[in-house]
Image (cartoon, rainbow, N blue to C red; front, side, top):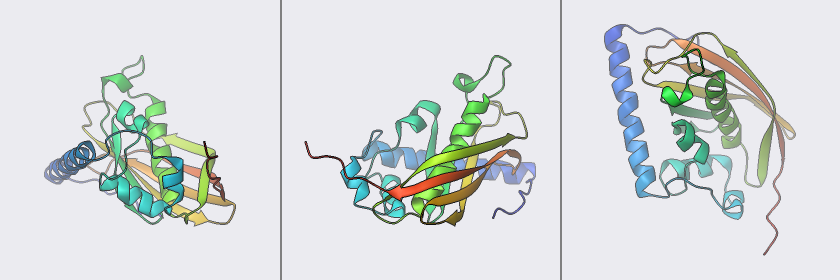
Length: 193
């Protein structure tokens, strides 16, 4: 479970943001020099447990997702049952009222939630989202240079899994939180060509 977010002072928030931007730059460089953006062949993904898959993505050995590239966010940290995505809200993400569209919040949270679940699955298992619930608690604009979606598993069973996530700014402000219920199933190997 998540601890209550703690708001940081201006100097601490600036240091946190600088740390986040440096980590993002390092991850983007590693990815660009490695596998880049793309799809991992299903047979290759099925040969790994979820955590091993995401660790390979972070090392640049496997590609990052197209959706992250399109919406300007990426995986920055993973452990078993825990995934953190970092995003940069930009002009392309604004709704007609000038704030970041709720769909961007939801996509970032959905990525952290689903990947937290995936990181806890053994080899040969897959998942899909059954339910996604998102609560927006504060408007977001490009003036907030980065946010992080921190997803953590609550439960992984043989047929379902649940997780929760929070979307936080570098100052610790909460922008949104969400939860998911996922269906867990045996992954099918792709048919031979």
